[in-house]
Image (cartoon, rainbow, N blue to C red; front, side):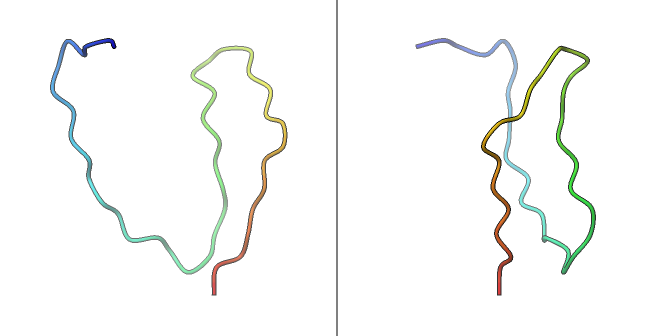
Length: 41
């Protein structure tokens, strides 16, 4: 098990009704495969 050098905390956010989806890449060569988006009702 690894340890973090700093404290982290979860900040809950309210999801918008609809809008764009952004995927983070952190400036590295990343490939996204098998990503599924399901509309919540």
